[in-house]
Length: 81
Image 1 (cartoon, rainbow, N blue to C red):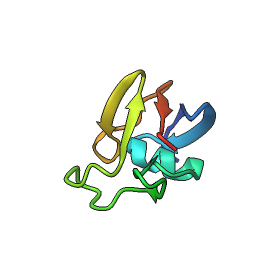
Image 2 (cartoon, rainbow, N blue to C red):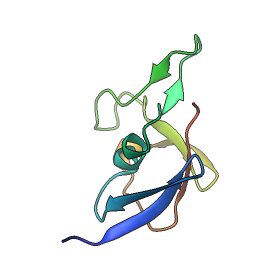
Image 3 (tube, rainbow, N blue to C red):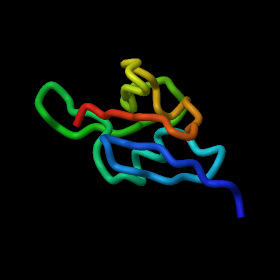
């Protein structure tokens, strides 16, 4: 069994396997990553950092691509949902 990491997504605790991305943690939390200008929920499209649909705020830093960022113990992730 691989080690697990604990982080928060929109103040909800989430646990992911070591090596998972922040995008995986947000998906496990169950909410959208952000909303479009017309309030439509958005989520990762490409999974390789090209589309920027997975942008989140991590530990206060805005516009971080969740699909390209490895999850770390204790991270605080905020979506724009």
